[in-house]
Image (cartoon, rainbow, N blue to C red; front, side, top):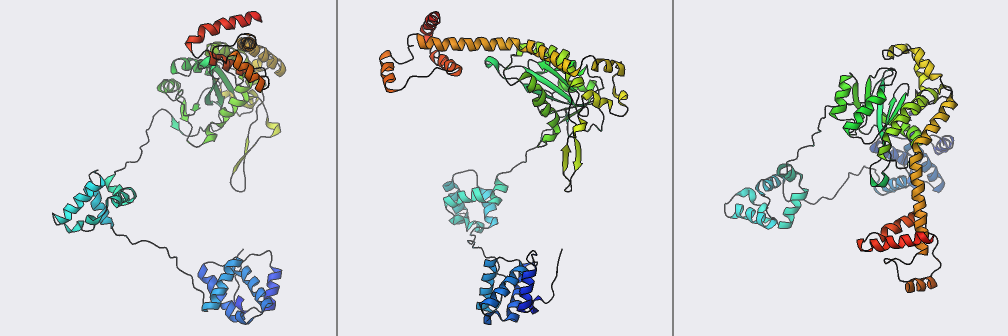
Length: 486
C-alpha cells in the first residue's frame, strides 16, 4: 500500500507526536534521494529546528525517521549539514583516478608492433620508430619503460583483443541422443536406465548392476553384468527389457558412455525407441532411477565388493526372483505434484496412493493397449497372484542368501587368515623388518603393553613386511612356524 502525504511539513509538534505514537507498525519511504533531502529541508525550516529545545527536537527527529525511512545516523548527518550550510544537496560520487598517459590508439599501435619479443627489445623498436624513422605517432610510446610495457600487455583490454585472438569454445554435437527430459505423457514404456558399481574386490573391477525403471508405473527390471563395455552390456540390456509386458517407447540415460554409444543407439533405432539423455545441472531428469539405486539395489546387494565373475549368478537371481517380487509384491509411492502460491512444484506422496507397479498399471485408462503382442491380462493376473507378498519376500531372501554365500565364505576365510596372522605375529620370533629383541625389551619398559592387533592392522603389517623381496623367504618361514605353534 502506498500513502502520499501532502504538506507534511505543516504539521504541528503535537500532531507529529500523535502521528509517531499511532503509526509504530507503519514504515514510510520516499522515492529518490533528492526528494527526501528537499522534504527534510522544508520541515526543518518550517519547524525552525535550530531554535527548538531538546524535547521538541526529539519529536521532530522521530517523525522524520518515520516519514523518510532513513537511519538515525544518516538523519543526524543531514541535520548537521543543514545547520552548517543551510541547504541539503546530493553530493556527486567522486572517485580518484590517475590520469591516463597512453591512449587506446597507443595501445593498439603497441599491439601492432609487438612481435612477442622481450620488453627491452620492443622498447628499443619503439624508440627507433620515433627517433630514427621520424614517425610522430610513436612519440609517447618512445618514452615507455620496459616494466610498464608488460603492464599494458597484461591489463590492456585493447591490447589483448588485437594481439591475442580468442575463439569461444564450440560445443561438440554428438548425434546419439536428444538432450532433454523424457515426456511420457502418462503412457508406460518410457524407461530410465542407470548402472551401479559394486566395488573393486582384490583390486579388480567388480560387478555392475543394470537398473531400468519405467517413469509412469515404476515397473523395475534389474540385471547383472561383469563390465559396462558394449559387447557384454547389450545382450544383458536386451535380456532385461524383453520380459517387460508393455512396449518400449522411450529410453533415457545419463551422460555415461556405457549407453551413449553407437551400438546402443542402433539397437534402440531398430526398435523405434526414443533415445534421450539428461540435461546438465538438471538432477531431476534422472532422480527416479537414482532413488531406486539406493532403495532397491543397495538394499539387496549392500556396499561390499562383489566379483565380476558372479554376474551370471546375479542375473539369474534378478530374473527368477527379484524382478517379479519388485513388480508384483513391492508397493511404491507415487508423487502428486502441487503448485504453491509462489509457483513452486511440491511433490507429495499420499498414504493411500502406495501400490505395486502392477496395480499402478491396472489403474491406467485403457492399459491393455500398451501391452506387447502375445501378453494378456489373464497371464499377468496369474503371475501376480501366484505367491503372496510375504511368501515372495521369503523366497527372494533365500535366493539372495544362496547368491551371497560364496562372498560370505570368502570373507570368513579372509577374517580367519588375518586372525591367524595376528596370533602368529605375537608368538613367532621378530621379523627382520621389526626392531631387535633388545630394542623391543627397552621399548616395552618405557611404554605400556601393545594391544591386540585388529584385522586391518594385521593386514597392513603383512603388506609392510612383504614389501621387500629379500625378506620374502624369511617372512614365509616364520609365518609357518607361528601358525604351527598355534
